[in-house]
Length: 261
Image (cartoon, rainbow, N blue to C red; front, top):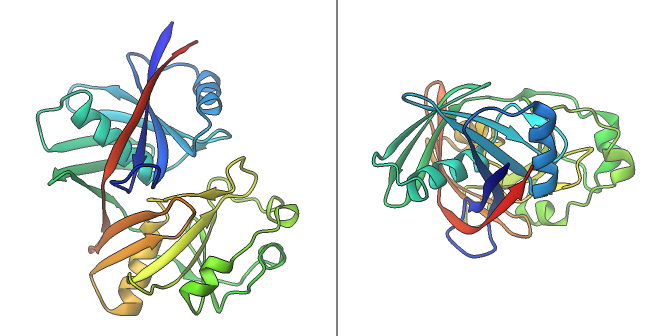
């Protein structure tokens, strides 16, 4: 049996920027162990498996290690695949997932993701995270992920992770976000995942479920621009809604391969 795998860069319109995701269209669901095996083989931060239903697309996300509860960049990549590879006629795509219904609208080659709002609450910084990170935050907040707040974008760029300590952290699923006010954006961030072969995620949509309400309240703005300042980088247009967030970005198809299973 052969599967077609498309690699698509999300939250960017440039070559070799954003976060790479692999998209696999299935006629029928495979065993979970087989899905994880395919994700390991793809060796990108997330692989999204999608299956066409009557009036929606069922989506699941796998890292090379685990199945995730939510992934923004792979959902954006899946929407790009459906629109441009499957030639979906509508500018509206409905996904169903373990995190509920996720809707994507398309306008001017931008994809608007309607995602759950996960406002973080003030928290103590766990000692193991403190040991794992070279610069200590001025504030700590928690939702699915730990949100570490810093004084400046310069601090965020200087963050280094000691994996000897970091991989002792148990956040399954979840990660550690470092964030500050941005120099040419409203805010910036980076995202790190413990016990992962890919320590730093290039562009993370799901972390913005928490970053958007946090910075919206802090800056008293409903519409914000965010940069993820990883090596590849990612750009996010953000809107804070009453119970949801809107995360807007672009995507670019890289290549297609066939995988035998």
